[in-house]
Amino acid sequence: MTNPDAVATRPAFEWLGPCPLSNTLRLPAEAVRLLALNDVSESTLRTPDVAEWLADPATRVVGGGSNVVFVTPRVPQAVRIDAADWRVTRSGDDWVDLSVEAGLGLDALVRETAARGWFGLEALAEIPGTVGAAPMQNVGAYGTEIADVTRWVEVWDRRERRIECLAPADCEFRYRGSRFKREAGRWMILRVGLRLATRAPGDWPPVGYPGVGEAVGEWSRRTGRAPAAITPGEYAEVITTIRRAKLPDWRSGWPGSAGSFFHNPVVSVETAERLARRWPEMPRFPVADGMKIPAGWLIEAAGLKGHRDGPVGVSSRHALVLEHHGGASGEVFQRFAEFVRRRVREETGIDLAIEPECVTL
Image (cartoon, rainbow, N blue to C red; front, side):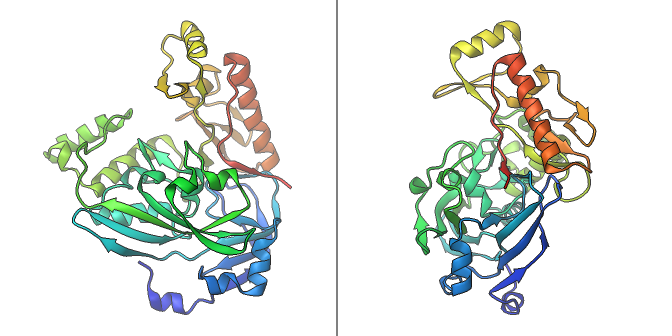
């Protein structure tokens, strides 16, 4: 939890600029003028200058930059939530409710709650970005989505200039999406309410995803403890090891990346069968409206895993990751992403959808 004395010394909001815009791709980007919100109370948001800035459609909400491609290097006006407190609001025999401000890093929250032995977020370890961004794209990994533990999302309606508290059904969560993403520009997420378990679920630990079962088995052999005895904190460390073996470090250094760059496409059963005749080893998973095919596998099938074009390339560790090795502009990176899409479409007939938001003027 945040030190209240430290918070008290910070102004409710600050005007900054020109201000660099953090992004895990490490593309050059800055806000000409940026409003930093250290407090997200209604009194702050209704301050005339703040309210006008938030109501202006030209004002872009920015965060940790983990799911964004700054195609343009200059954003004229932006707002960022730096409020990062969290607290327990209620608890029961086997659950605990949290209220978390949007500016807190998601990974920091995962570490803290897992260390306390609370279940529900541990599979999201090592995912960059803020808590406020998590519901927008309904972040998920290894069978867990933020929607699974969300009880409410408090937002500032930029159009109506008021705070609303939305229930999960009103958030319209879906695979890597939500109402907030669909109605981009209207909502600014202020706080998220989460319910975590204080007792292990019946299927603990989840090991149904590639690499996870083997990693938990290795943990069990190393510690001499049964897999079911693994704690949320220990499980989070297992997930961390798996992710770091596949992905560049989003905290520092090169290359930069935005993590998984394309959605896993869902195709018809007929399309999947056609592709499987050519590639019998192609992984595919039945879903409600067809068959899901891993986008990374499709990129490999197009012969692009490890492909490099100067300062940009496809990761040699995980083909779903596009990398920036330094020196590229956002336009250069975007052109490379379109090249990857075109090659996959030519080779397989499938048109991949880009997951990160591409910021253009």
